[in-house]
Every structure is written in C-alpha cells, then in structure tokens.
Amino acid sequence: MQLSGKTAIITGSNSGIGLGIARELARAGADVVLNSFTDRDEDHALAREIAEETGVTARYIKADMSKGEECRALIEQAGRCDILVNNAGIQHVAPIDAFPTGKWDAIIAINLTSAFHTTAAALPMMRKAGWGRVVNIASAHGLTASPYKSAYIAAKHGIVGLSKTVALETAQEPITCNAICPGYVLTPLVESQIPDTMKEYDMDRETVIKEVMLKRQPSKEFATVEQMGGTCVFLCSDAAAQITGTTISVDGGWTAL
Ligand code: NAD
Image (cartoon, rainbow, N blue to C red):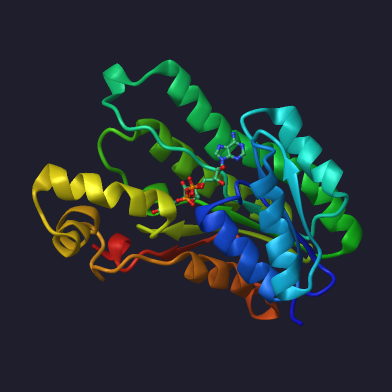
C-alpha cells in the first residue's frame, strides 16, 4: 500500500473533514492518530472502526489545540509523525467592532497557532525518518475574504503564509508543506444548518443549498470530505514530491471568480 509504514497525525479529526482525511489516509495504508479536545468513548470508537475497516493501526489522542503545550504533547505522545495534517478549526461570525476578543483569540490559537506548535514538534521526527508531509487545511477564505469573519480569514491567510515558510525551510529535504483550500464542504456541521436556513429563507432544501449556501461556489455542488482526503493522499504521493509551498483549491471554482 502506498502509505504503509507511515504514521499520520490529523488534528481535529473526530468529525467532518479531519475524520474524512483520516479515513482516506488509512485506506492508503497509513497508521493514523485521531485527535480532538474531548476524551469520550465514541472518540476512541472511531479509531477502532478505522482500524477494523482498513487493517492499519489507529489511535485517538486527546489534546486541546488551543493550548501550545498540548499541541506539542500530541506529537510527542504519538511518538512518530511522517504526515501531519493541521485541520482543527472553529468559526465565529460577527462584525469586527462587535467581535468578542475571546473568540478572536480562540480562532487564532486553534486555526493558526496550533499548526506552528505541531509543525515545530513534528519536523525533527520527519527529518529523522528522512521523509515528511505537512498538509494544512486552510480554506477558500485563505485566499479571499468575506465580511464578518475577520478572525477566521486572518487565521486562514496566516496558515497559507506559514505553509510557504515551512516549505522554504524544508525545500532541500524530502519534506513538503502545502495548504488545501476547500470551498464549502458537506460536513455534519454544515448539514445541520440546512433545516434552519430553509425556515429562515422560506426555501426548499435544494434552493437553500444552491442559492444561499453555495452562492459563491460556481459548481453549485458541495465538495466532499472524501475529496479532501483524496487530495491529501495525492500530496503524500511521489507524484507530489516537488509540490511544496503552494495551495490546492478544492472549491468548485470559488477562487476563479
Ligand atoms: P468540524 O467542526 O466538523 O471539525 C472541526 C474539528 O476540529 C472537530 O474534530 C473538532 O472536534 C476539532 N476541534 C475544534 N476545537 C478543537 C480544539 N480546541 N482542539 C482540538 N480539536 C478541536 O468542521 P469541518 O468543517 O470538518 O472543519 C475542519 C477544517 O476544515 C477547519 O479548519 C475548517 O476551517 C476547514 N474548512 C471547512 C470548510 C467547510 O465547508 N466545512 C471549508 C473550508 C475549510
């Protein structure tokens, strides 16, 4: 299998895109470490499910990505890190003059600073192993902006810049660092917003999806977590060995507008 013998750590992977990426990396043969800030039976059950489905070793390690020391401890506790996917993220929407400072701090910490800590802790392991891939999950909002999402957009633009810097610092080593920029992805979180939006706009499901949620996504289709996982597997392949310091948009044409 393409990634057998590699260990992948995916932050924020007990749901949505992170879980989808973990599943695809496991299907490609990588051992996976799932993570979030909770420590519930169902978190560990997800790892068991992936192990049973794919035959790889899968573990769940609790670590709060808003805390620098826990970000570093996640990597140390995993013991090995060939593939690091910085995916954990939260969102808050408010005009900047009403944006709560606590929300700003949490978004910058979880969506951006965590990647600084995990990357710093993982690079020595990658260098020791002689191979490494850092994949940062940014967003179409890492390349464009929308009103009322100041912290999220600052963090996502920041992680695109961080990806370029890490790529330059590792350019002459067998290590790459890139950012995936998803458009709107159908995750359980997004799915759960559909009924309320249907009520708010008095529209049927299809119209809400096409005219409200996917207003800026020219394909008028959600991207899927499997597509994010597949892009990640591609970035870990030999074909992508010279792809570093760049962004890959998986956004149905959003950033072409
Ligand atoms: P999600 O809410 O399903 O996933 C977020 C993950 O981060 C969850 O596993 C959650 O437990 C974890 N997390 C949150 N706070 C954490 C913390 N303090 N410590 C550790 N883990 C924490 O949402 P998602 O849509 O799957 O988002 C995943 C990533 O993809 C985020 O970075 C998000 O910004 C990005 N993204 C999502 C979309 C989309 O349309 N869904 C689009 C572009 C980018």
